[in-house]
Length: 388
Ligand SMILES: [Zn+2]
View 1: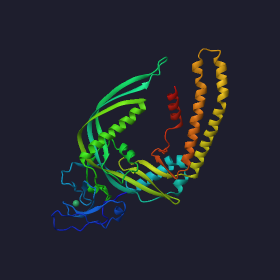
View 2: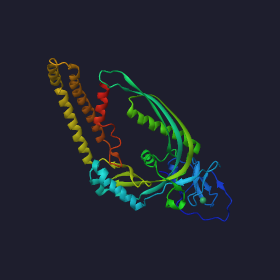
View 3: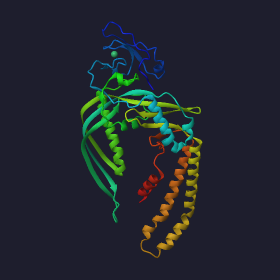
View 4: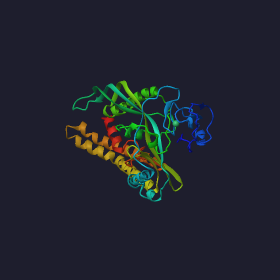
């Protein structure tokens, strides 16, 4: 995690003349150098305070007076911020509450008792809010499921609308819970940036220009639309998106990172200062979690074995029954379903055994395992859909 604010206040010089001393490495933030980020010393054009700039920074904010400018000398767009509604104590309470309630569902209450929460760290992340109007058009198809029909039903649609797309203005260093964070801030109202409201926490500089933000916004909208469409249509042949950017605003957004230690491991929880809620948290895989998963896995394995063993008898019974009735085609679905059920349970069991070997897991605000992949019911529905 990068930190660009120097730790001590600058001495005010009487000279107001802008001055920059490029390519001099900062001695105050050696951790930056270990991350491979080059720093240059800079003197604020507004208050004359010296502070380091990252070599990749393209829009910078003075940590003392809040003066914001583009490093290449271009114009600075309107600079806003989303208010931070938490202080360090609130954040600790939020994280502890989350471990006790949501995370405890997966890993048990023992972690809450012995978790040692370190000092929460607030960072102001630079973002662009890209306000645009858009027009989409897509062409896809779903299987025809009507009685007596085969083949595909063509689906063609689209929409026009407008909205805001948020883009993180960093190239690297901040990624934990970023998807969750960006998704959570969509409809919030920003206020004018004020350095006093940052509570002396680091205000990260932008590493992308306003011009870079627009193609990124387009790409983000396109990816989200495609992902949403693939839940509705089984085949997506074509997707087109026209975006017209109406406004692009530079906004700093409060992001809290809370490290905690449990036994000898260190984990982190991300909290949004905008909503005051947990975004995502790493938690240790506890013995209780392992045993729970192991039992589920073994149960699934046994059920799958029983189902597959029952298959010949079920098939025999079905064939006996169907010889005396007309709908023999439909009734043959039963042994197929038994076979599929056995197969899905078996793969689920193997996959669950894999999760037991992990050292830590990522849980969402609701305490759900983020990396569990599609659930059993979903997999079964998908397989049945494919074989129909
Ligand atoms: Zn300044």
